[in-house]
Length: 295
Image 1 (cartoon, rainbow, N blue to C red):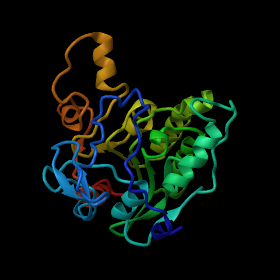
Image 2 (cartoon, rainbow, N blue to C red):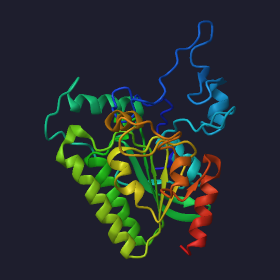
Image 3 (spheres, rainbow, N blue to C red):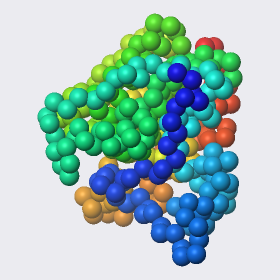
Image 4 (tube, one colour):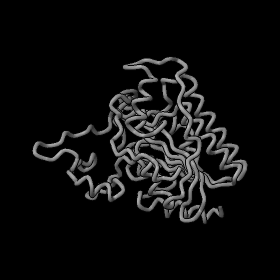
């Protein structure tokens, strides 16, 4: 399926129920007299900016450079050469083995999220070209149940990695998941961490090149598994990356945390990631890395 056929979701993900991200800035209400939908406020600098200007700037704040939410469809559009994306395993649908119910039935939640985002689940996978270099690519989207990893996300990523191994393709996975493993699916969700990590181990044994790109947020079981296993780990500026969120950690250890704790700049300084790359430079940086590694 071509990138142009993907439904783009430009709504900000709803992380209000996520204990991992409870310390993230809350949405600001639009001021009276400002036409709805024309303006938005940057969560980092607080400036009110023209929504169209932000969209034309890859959803990066034109005032401070803060990297805002970007849908999986838009990430693929910006990362891959135009018209080259071919989706894999887009027919997979999540199961409901526990018949889980919280505020509403899990099956109903999935249907409502699919209608709202245009996605089948929280990941898009497939193949395409980056500066005329063919790659296997996966992107998770925090707008779909906070980008949590359930059976479909895990299965799609595992199949993506297996095809990359069979076809000797460089592998690029862009992580934007604030929900970790999806509790609604129980152990079937938790096992995806091991399944995807095992597929990556086989890919590594075959000599594959895995570039992991961390975006805001990359948390929970995603950060604790495949997102941290790249041969090279890139991150967008000021991305929140970790297992539990800063507020949860602070409440547990009852100590003040360092300034910028769990942000990509802090993680780069402490050796957790290899490079911070601006969104506008990511495509060129990945292409250059593939060439350097001889893939």
